[in-house]
Length: 231
Image (cartoon, rainbow, N blue to C red; front, side, top):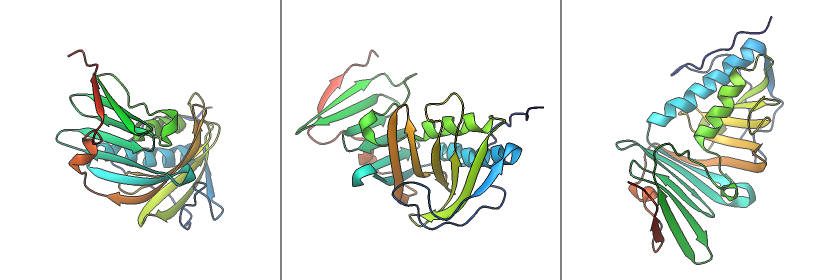
């Protein structure tokens, strides 16, 4: 008889023993041999980590990442008003209540194009090297209702933050069926390694701040602005 899918809860703490690891390496959540979980226990662990990630959507923070090849990326989330900004080597994506602005840097020129924010997802270009919290949350939600899920778990410290890590494989009907993810106790992505919709992604947290700077939601200096909003 198949296991009953478990609904994602909000605001719960990670349960069950996890194996202590060293710092997350450049290749992802690797190191000491991880412990394993399967069936209902595995989906419980995935659900608990997903809860953390979902809860962080209502907080203000700035997370800086080392990307594949040594580049730097940043995710900044702020409240009142609710807004989020992504910075990566090839540009920026900034969501505010007024616009979804995508900035692309080519050579010495940066062009920022604003579109209507309502109903449009935060889709980063394949060149960004980042994965959004919403994308990771969708992957975890899909994994949590997989009755045949097998998951390896471990706990580690990344950028001086305690993080719980999951290694999942063979998740059905998602753009990244095999991936490693680590999430801090604050709910920030601490590490992600996987191929998302055909694009390899490796990101490791290097700094976390429980605040957001206003300048992260501004267009880069000197950028050319194109307004394609209909409102």
